[in-house]
Image (cartoon, rainbow, N blue to C red; front, side, top):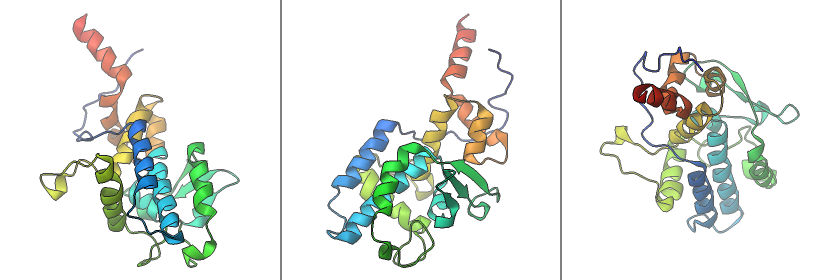
Length: 218
């Protein structure tokens, strides 16, 4: 196999922390067992919501805001697609993402709750304060109810240098995908407007790395 793509043609910072599927399983288990949720239907609903958000962010490699702002109308259960609205991402373009079948059980649990819990909100993940769960609120929930209890939280030296955050779910899935399929498929899944952004993950591609290793040791 020939490699004609320059991995380092532009400078992008590599993801600081990458989670494997075993880490995602730990997160889901932590949410199941966390006693800090309300001990009533609201708490059960929020627990189901948080597990679904974690799995959807990871399995679809979504940006947090793309998912948190998603509406019921953005789901097409017949075609099994999710519409990601451009107004909620950097490239400002809509895209369709195939639903990952691994999230189906969590979908069923979450949407089997009484509809009055959504209080008429058109959003998949509403909150008490807003029509939908804000990125800042989710950041707090993910840190305090998931990462810290799971032992996956890394205290940053500065707030702007956080290595473990909700966005890491996207990085982790992108790293997994780059080892399974071609770069253009990964770019389309991630919604990158420039293929150079996707090349960040080529550095983590095991096949390419082994190709370089063989060249150096030949």
